[in-house]
Structures are given as structure tokens and as C-alpha cells.
Image (tube, rainbow, N blue to C red; front, side):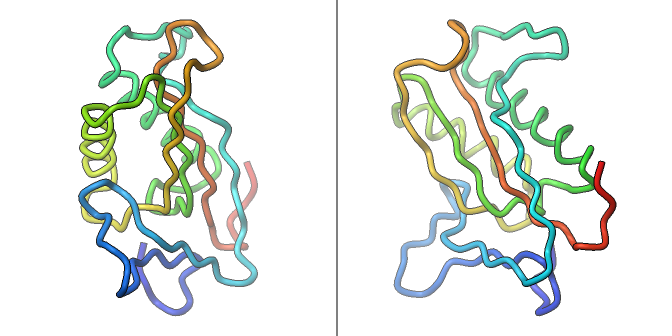
Amino acid sequence: MSHQNDAPLHLSNPEGLYDPTENGYSHLAVIAPGSRLVFIAGQGGENVHGELPGDFHLQVRWALANLRVALNAAGGELSDIAKLTTLVVDHDEDKLGVLADEIREAWGSAPTPAQTLIPVPRLALDDMLFEVEAVAVLPNEAPAP
């Protein structure tokens, strides 16, 4: 997303804070007045049939793909996401590295959203290892799904 003054979303990392780019997020997400907010429920790494792979890496990749499908349905793209909340079962540094790599791959050169990672002992389903929810910002004139 562009960082023009009229853009509905501006992502940034102010001076005085460390640069979180390597970890796949930004510190600030500023939303312009009159923008439309889209809230996306937690997406897991299941396929359309509800099947979950046993691999954490695949669950992260598939969850981000599911997030993209939900956002596309509202008329948006990943670059329109202001805030992610990620839930990781039995979080460790290796899982953080996987998540950061997948975020960088999914967002490419676009600024990454503000993000909070929450380690959890379990999620809704027994085999679920990762979940991501999002808040996206779209221009107000975009049609609702």
C-alpha cells in the first residue's frame, strides 16, 4: 500500500524503536478518517475441507493463504492489513523464525502490519498449532461483500 497522505492506511517504524522488519511486522498502523475497517476472524491452517497438516510451517502458510481469501472477499489485499494477532501453540524461537519468513514471503516488499504474537497452550482444535486474525483498512467507497 502506498504511503501517500490520502491512503487509508500508513504503516511505519518510528525512530527510537528497533526495526522489526526482520520479524515481519511494523510498530505503527495509522488509519485515515473515513476508512472502512474489516475484521477477519482467526484463520487456522486448514484446507477447505477442514483438514489440518501436522506441520507448523504448513499451518502458518495455509493460515496466511486463508487470511488472503477472506480479505479478498471483502475487496482487500494483505497490504491493507493494519493489525495481526497471531496465536502460536508452544511458541519458541524456531516458530518465530518460520512465522517471520512466511510473513515476509506473503507481504513481499509491502510494509508489514502491526502484530502481536501470543503464545498459547492450545487452540480450538486438537491439532491446530497456529491461528491468525486481522484488522484491515479499506477505502470507504469499496463495496461491502
